[in-house]
Image 1: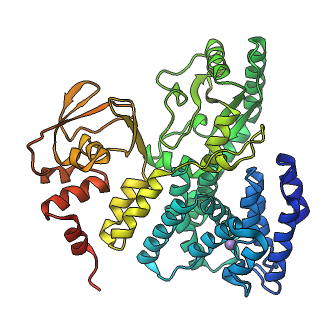
Image 2 (image 1 turned 30 degrees about the vertical axis):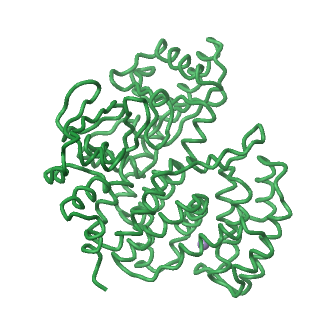
Image 3 (image 1 turned 90 degrees about the vertical axis):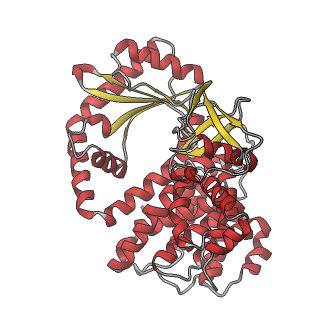
Length: 488
Ligand code: MN
């Protein structure tokens, strides 16, 4: 179906009646005039690209301000119209978003350096205004959807960059829907043979089990109704191809069950309904041991909340249920983007502080220019995170595999430097102990201690800890930074 400005307006109206629709129309006309005479590689008029980007965002019920900026996102970079003119017509908020996108677009380098430059720019953009990234992801999703029009080499580069940089960042921001799209769209170009194989595998299994899944959905709905648990929606949901492929790799291609491919998702009104529904399902179908996951009482580090359970369904077929509220659902699909959602009561969600992005922006200022640090940075900010607690109950967000020393440096440099022991969950542990999600960590300090132990470098994970330990060795941090920066 062809995407039009009228269709876009209709979509936005459906979730936000009081949106400034004239402004959106104006942005479309403005962009269309600016891009007049420009064409995509596919031969289509250029305006279809910003329009498609806006549609992707409207499908996610994103704030119309962001959608207006999405319509204008390529104007200053690709046309004679300047950012000042955008500002004169649309105000400073929208111009600010467009400026953020434009900054991201200008990459000077090639190869590994381009990779770094890209990362660095994105982190700065995120720290400044995470809404820029929301537009950038939608922009990239449309580019991937139309990648076939580009030459093979360019296709590969764009897909790889999306898989290695964009998708992990979307994941860190809790934007499951965008992460999944970015991965599956790139997967096709990076590993074409595997993509086709996995897709075929899934499609065949699904076809075979389609009727069974419908019956299970119907039965679950009926049982919940009988127990007076209101259900907003219940449906089978295909799992993503790329994440399924990753799972296959981890399991050495060993047999995969249908529950790796499809899950039944149940949306209920309240948190209490989630647990009540879980109880009913378990009464009807026996759960598999060790496969009940309560991500509500203990959310995943990126904010994901849901109850998961895998049960022996009718006929002994194993299948997974996911239970959550509408709010949890939107958070899981859209992450930080959910905070700019129109909410039913008409209030705006507050702008969330994204501490790690700000930390990263700080770090990159100093040392991201040094290639050798790339791995550390990736470990710190792109890999899975854990949440641990101080004895006072404050939450500390650390990369997976972190030790009490990482924790100590995260709290304060001096606590790290004078750290002499640690207690985890009220038990003494060695300083190289790997912390687990939910641990309560207390650091024991030795006031007389002068400097950290250089051997800690063998196990610490965070950039903060590493840099402070190394800095102590070199007497001063500034000396060290100077020493690692490339000579001009
Ligand atoms: Mn674009």
